Structure formats: structure tokens, C-alpha cells
Image (cartoon, rainbow, N blue to C red):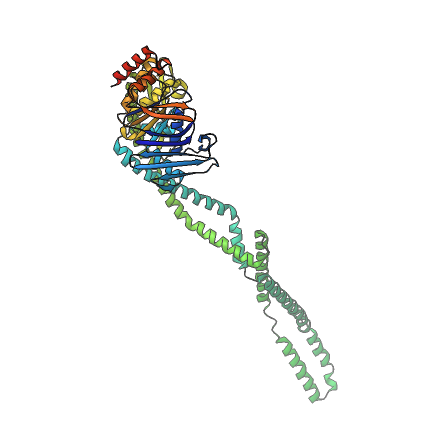
Length: 526
């Protein structure tokens, strides 16, 4: 709880120190006296970033210090927009300060009624009524498997995305691989293949010319060649030669003939095969370069290595894809099963909370109005389950969500009824109400005051109020008055409190009838 609050240059307050007690602490004063400055000061402690606008006009800095039970918190805001915070004298970040204070204080002004319209807040209120084993064991199990399912789902999406990108990027991989298998690319290969092809082509052409000459000399397979014609011509000359001369000529001619006939012009098949293979490899290399749009062979080698690596991963990832798909499906199945357990528990809790709230509403002069909770299933799992909760009111023939049906006063009483109906552990040590009775009057205000008094038995309640019947119920009464230097505030009791209640009743603290009525209210509250 808050034991003491010190305010310096916030709103209309120059300097003030307030002491609070257990139970119901009421803060009253005329309109414009500075009551809301107390709430603004507490909002600064809870992390409000609108600090500059809270600084008292003409001042450069404003400070709020609160002594909670066991914890001291300070927030200072400067006109430059900067601020600092301390917890137990140690500098901390604003977020850490806000986290600490929000666990200790809940501020509920007229604007706080908006929380009733927020589905997430409504679901949180409902979940506060779940059995303990659901709020702990079941939710812990669900969060664990939900996180696993979300992780495995993200991994599966990433894996599928990468596989799709590789398949799209290398959609012509089969053709590339076929060309790579033929070309066997390596640095400087195209030039070497061109040179090899030129050599082979030259060699084949030379062999072709030699073959033509050989056939001309030997006659080939079907006719006499030049050598045979020479031999025939020489036969006609032998009669004019002596034996030795003719023998020498015959021997020479036979030697030439045998030598020419013995020439081996083979290898053409090997050269043709090598030329075909070289042409195929060179053609494949050039097509590969065009297909990949990479003219440089070193870059082509790197690119081909990248293709090999990616497609090798693609092939290996198929098993991973199947395993991850199965795991993701199983994680989702388990998460859905636990979400259904939570839904069943929420349905039961909705009935229990509705009954509690309706019982309190009956004590707040809201007879004929029924409160209920609609639970709807979501299409997609969230970390808080698979449900959305929506608070509704039914008033005779009217029925709809609280945002559409309830008036401002009804929202105030509904918010109070929820505070009283939710488990005690839902309540913070301190709740601050800023004119929560706005829109109420007469019996409704009195009944709301009685319920606030009941709530103050569970936690400390600090209430800024204009309603005399509620102010009279306070265990502690703080009066704020406008002064020439700003606002003064002090704890009041006895006759001074009687005068303030009388002022709230009639507008005048000195009217005897009002004072008598004030004494009656104060005596009845004891």
C-alpha cells in the first residue's frame, strides 16, 4: 500500500505531503482545487510519458515521491522533456519504474472504464477466475507447446521458403547439370578446346590430302595408280637395258612401290571421334555460359559450385522437411488439445464470474440488468489460447456489448462489481479511483460507496470524489483547497470533516441542516 506521497510542482500543487492508511482513503475539495493532480502524480509513477504537461506552470521541474510498504519510488520530470526515476534511491529506467509501480497500484479514472471495452483485458479478467491448476499447470503446458509449435512452424515456413527459392532460382538445373557433365568446366578450358579442335582439324585435313596422294599413287582399291603406270612404262624400256641396269630399275621400282603401299594412314577414326568429342564439349561449355549468363570461366566454376551446394542441400533437406512437417503438425495437435481444455475451463469460469458480478450489480441498484460473457473461438491459436471473450449486458429487450449498452454510470458500477467479483489475487495492493461515481447519484451513489468500502477491506482504496455519501465512508479523509500559491492539502477529522461533508451536501460548510446531515452520514459509516 501507499503510506506517504510527496508532490512538488505537479499540476496545481506546489508542495504537499499526504499520509494514507489502510482501507478507504477519500480525497475531496472544490472543483479546480487540485484533486486530480494527486492522480496525475501517481500516473507519473506508473510510467506516464506525458510528464511535461503535468509540471506546474512557470516551473522547470516536478517531482513525485511515494513510500510504498517496503519500497520507495521517485519520478522527476523536467520542462525539457527529460525525466529520471529512482527505486529505493537507485536510478532506474522509466520502464523498470513503471513495472514496479504498476504491480503496486492500479489507477482507475473515468477513462479507465475503457478497459472494459478491450477484448484482451476482458479475457484476462475471465482467466483470473480459472481454477489454479488451469492458470498454472495447464497454461504452462500450453505456453510450452505453443512456443514449440510456433518455433517449429516458423522453421517449417523458412525451410519451405528456401526450398522454393532454390527450386525457382535453379529451375533449369537439369539442363545445366547435363551441360556441366559434358563440358566439365575448368579455368581456361574454352581456349584449350579451341586450340585442340584446331589441331585435330588440321591433322584430319592433312590426312585427307595424304590419302588422296596415296590413292593416286596406288590406285586405291579399284584401279591402277601412278606407280603401276610407271612400272608399265618401264617394261617398255627394259629391252634397251642390260641385265644389271634392268634389274636395278626393277628393284628400285619395287622398293618404291612396296614403301608407298606400306604407308599407314590410319587414325582417322580416332581423330574424328576426338574432334566430335571436343566439339561437343566446346559447344556444351559455350551453351552453359549463355544459359548462366556468365562469360568468365572462373565465375562459372564458382556458380556451378554454388548450384551443386544448393541442390545437394535441397536433396538432403527433403527428409528434414518431412520430419519438421510431422513435428509441427504434432505440436499444433497438442496445442489445440490444451486450448480446448482451457476453453472448457473458461466456459465454466464465465458462468461463475457472471453470477458473482450479477450478485454485486443487484447491490448497486442495477436490478433488471444482467451481465454475461460470450466466449468465441478463434481461427488461429494465440499465446493466450484460442478464445476471445466479450462482456455484454442485457436490459429487458436490449442486449449488446458493454460498450454499446452501458451508460457512463453503469460502466462505473460494472467496473466496481468486477473488482469485487474477481479473486483477491487479481487486486493490487492499492487501487486509485478518480471520480468513479461520476454519473451516479442518490441510491446508486450510496450503494456504490458501500461497495467501495467493501473493496477497501481487500486492498487499499484511494478515492477522489465529489459525492458526500461516499466521502463519509472513508477511513481517512484528505481535503484539498485552492490557495493563493496553488493548492494546500491536509488530513481532516472531527468537526473539520463535518464541515467538508456539509459543503459537499449543500455548497456551504456552515449550513446547520447540512452539518447535521453530515454528522448523520459520518455516524452511520462507523
